[in-house]
Image (cartoon, rainbow, N blue to C red; front, side, top):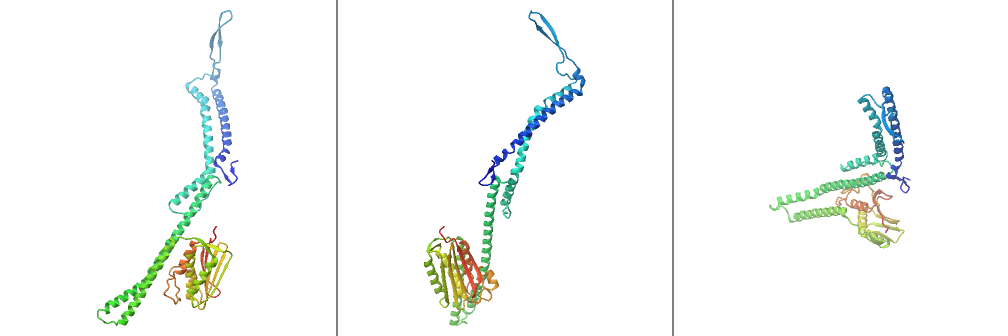
Length: 401
């Protein structure tokens, strides 16, 4: 009766009813024991002082007969008379003890039942909630909340545990983002130092030789051109960094897109980005439409193809698959493939392999692609395929549901 079958939870109020019969039985047995005990104690006390029982007290009363005559009668043995005040006091205490002891016993039974019920049904859950509350207030979330007995408090513990897990995940994500931001800023500061140093050197050179006219116009134009290139590089850096920071506030504009139209756009982009490479493009789909942010998908695709073209010798192989609620874009080149370090760090910000001949690119394309994939509940897989390096972007939840 106390069990809620739908959830398997025992109601606290119905569970308490199981303890009431035990309380009543104990109270009744105790009251009986107190009554019998005090009566036996009274008898024992009277027998302890035998003179009290043998002492007689004679009382007289006058009765009127039918014929109007008055008669005197005597009545003996009225009550128990003890010899001293102390004896009478003790006897009175014994006589009235049960008047005090019975209610006190009933109170103890009720209180004891309540304490036992609390210890058995509620204490563990309440202690767990209090401990969890203290830990959460101190921002310590790496623990597990034990629910205790299956009742309403265990449901509350379950809700607390869900809240703790959500806070823990959010804290972990916030910490990860802060650490990633720190690494990103550190990498940016490191990489931006080179063009600034170059510009400073050129500025010192011009300041030293121009006033004396010891530099030719041709040399001057060459220096200015190189300075302009470094300035352009700085502009590109700041633009890329701005794009990376905006990823945190990226808002998706999901709308239905035809798979055929999307495929044609992807094919066209690959032709533009890799004019000197052979493109092996295939698209497989089990649906006509997908629900995506087309601009975001195209940005990831451009990053993957640009990265592949940079390392490809002759060919880039592109495979687009739409299956269920998953969109998969795989780009593989026929280059030397990823090194061991690149397999681990290629999607990190500003990563460039030591053997990489191209020192101009910033190493942000795969990083941006990874962030976007994660925001769309997908992932970015970096591996070596049958030809060379292979990068696969997965996007989940492309159905309307």
